[in-house]
Image (cartoon, rainbow, N blue to C red; front, side, top):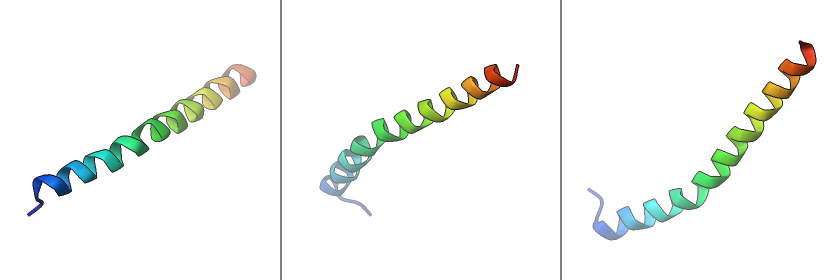
Length: 40
């Protein structure tokens, strides 16, 4: 069972990585879209 402090620590760690994951996701979608337009 996690204590409240552990949950806060986990939340902060995830909060730090979330924008990076979102950025990577956007870049991947962008490159896929660009290659699709290049092919078409």
